[in-house]
Length: 465
Image 1: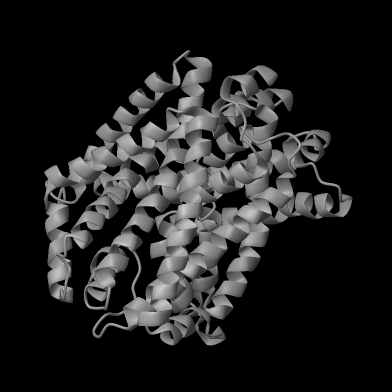
Image 2: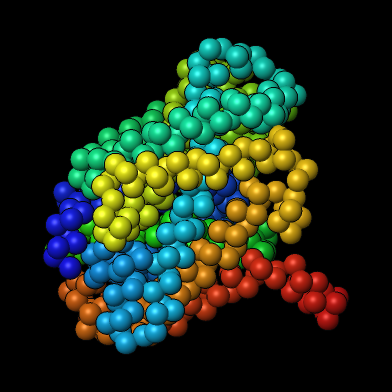
């Protein structure tokens, strides 16, 4: 494994890994989804349930995934292959690495298109296009962007170039230097936006939306949402965290490092909510929402109608672009690492090849919003909807489930203990019990509900009324 460590290098410090892993975890979901689902599902009550889910699913499986990466010291594909052989398991288990790398690549292909929207809005906000804009005009402007395939391709291409431009530099000069700049910048921009929200927005309305303890609004469906988001928010099951774990210094405490990443990811999502929703509530006629409608319709209206809003709107969309960029570099790195290790590619040629293929596949997502909007050959879904469904509902939870089972049941316990690098036997015993029994059951539950939730709910309603 030493040769692989020399081939790829290691993070300069434990904190570089923390910044890289946090950058991978913090993406569009933290900003356009988590704050909204918190407010809609009980506020403080939802946050408590979510933190419990993070403790039982997110952090235990993230520790397991980083542990595999550090033990294998290679790309996820080769690490899983070698560790499966080390455990005396059939080749099937090595497929976990392939599944994660392919899932990350597929996600990058459509994620870069959406990130391109954020790049467009940085410049659109800066040129004053949203000054005093109405909700109807903002919605029409967003629809015009989606219908313009040439402009979408331009921004998609730029974002892919930005992504491969970082990863070409390698672990230390590329990824390491990038996250040491991007993540502190993201934190600073988030604090600037929070101060603006306090001064110009309806801060108490936003705070109450997020943190009022409304246990009556927390349903079993809300618990399922918390459970699912606790898994997806940490970029689990897509090879990125396993690849980053391969570059982690041997002496670093894995458990403390991962817990720090989990705390930072959750904190950034909550602060993002406190920066966003006071701005939304301060503007007449805008309702809180999630997804593209919040980012690309509602917030431009809010910023366009507030004092100094255009300047802080630019800051906001720069923040969005940075969050997407730091996630995207982690999506392409596992595949690049594999090509460098096993196919004798240089980092330059590996990045160009995978970047081009992701760009090419991303054209299908671009066309899903215009020319191919009515073309739904994938089980009644557009190409974008199908890739999103395939990765989020099948590949990622299945990969996370298999990682928990592999580490909890098949890796030699002495190897797990050595890589975890903890001083407390009590902590190891508790974590090992959770990753062995609790995490697989909960992720399996998420997996089943994602695939068959509607049918199960209909069956239960038929049985119990």
